[in-house]
Amino acid sequence: MTATQDPTVLNSLYQRSVADYWNTEKNPVNLRLGEVDGIYHHHYGVGDVDWTVLDGSAETRDERVIRELHRLESAQADLLMSWLGPLEPHHRVMDAGSGRGGSSIVANLRFGCHVDGVSISESQVAFANEQARQRGVADKVRFHFRNMLDTRFESGTFQAIWNNESTMYVELSLLFAEHARLLNRGGRYVCITGCYNDAYGLPSRAISQINAHYICDIHPRSTYFKEMAANRLVPISVVDLTPATIPYWELRAKSSLATGIEQPFLDAYKNGSFQYLLIAADRA
Image (cartoon, one colour):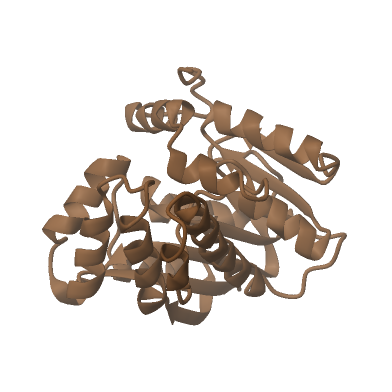
């Protein structure tokens, strides 16, 4: 599926290339994990690994590892949700860069709130809307073919917004300006992201490999705080999840779903050039 050349959604050659990538992406590391319970995440995991999944029958080893990887990515989504604030069923929230919809489904299950997911991948939007329909929540969970830099939603619409590993595809100055416009005053913004460590210097070789693999541009840590401050997003907490995500990558490297990018992630995390952060901020 090729991205629709809609200039109101895709307004640069780069965005069209990213949309084309995700429209045709069918990586088993995303699809097979989602098949475990029908919640399709497009992010990584956190927490201690149950290494006993590598023991026992070789015939069922792959299934055990996949379930464990999915448990870890579900733990990451649950952690993000725990930072969204006291949400009620009447609240409206936005999943910016919603992928195949996993985080949006989790938010609705947890809070009962209205969720709008936004993605520049038409195939992902269609997939996610079908998941919402199958779960009987399409009246409250909707996915839109829109650009998270210019969503066309009304100002002050949302009580909470999050990016789960999607900020590296956009300019943060534009993204945070749009989030600040959309959030109610006092609303919550949360992102989980990989960023390069300014103290290390320029991006390491491993980070360059990650950028090339995912057609993205990993931002320095300092840019997140600079652009949040410029757009009335005041950090209330920063959690370094780097130690918590390394076990996920170590297990994934041993799985049948390994894509070859696992070692650059592990190298970058362990040499200190790359960090995995959760940042929660309130709209002032």
